[in-house]
Image (cartoon, rainbow, N blue to C red; front, side):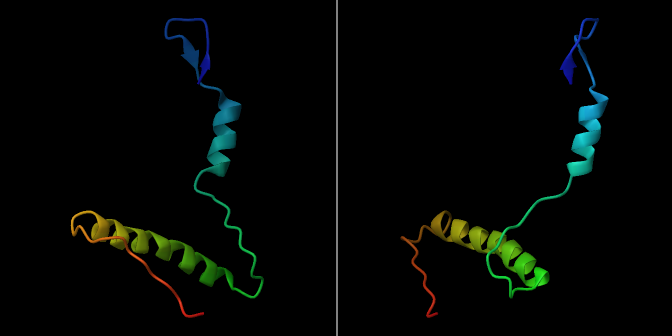
Amino acid sequence: MVPSVGRRGFRVDLKALERERKLDGRFLLFHTDPAQEAAEVFRTYFQKDSIEKVLRTAKGPLSLGPLRYGRKD
């Protein structure tokens, strides 16, 4: 939308709308390990959502104390 003289005060910028449509639904993931396959990168990225939900539940409704976690490697 861009300001415009007229009854409604705006108009749709068709060029901007087309640029946004081309970018809709895309995002960039950057990682530094070239040995990882793309499928593994995406799987790891989307696992973070479930881990965040578990931690949110543990800290909120369950009222657990500070959570500490670690990995051996």
